[in-house]
Length: 65
Image (tube, rainbow, N blue to C red; front, side):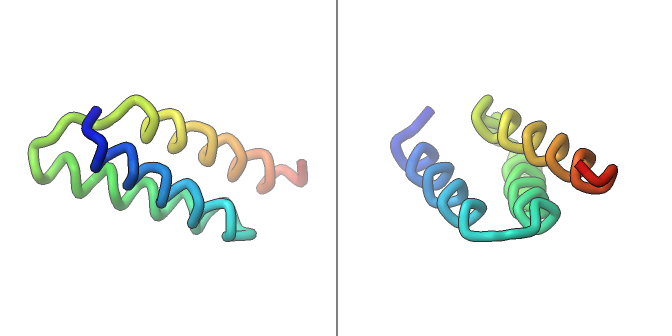
């Protein structure tokens, strides 16, 4: 993974940490993944993990957990 992508992921992670609603963080990650797909770039594993973790958090929160 390029240094630029590592920095972008770190920045995105920091933004998500400041957001109280996991759905908003999930939307940010999903948007970036979609942008990378449109550009024909490989999706970094770290972004995929972030997406899955936030999705799980959203599901847990929707169930009252």
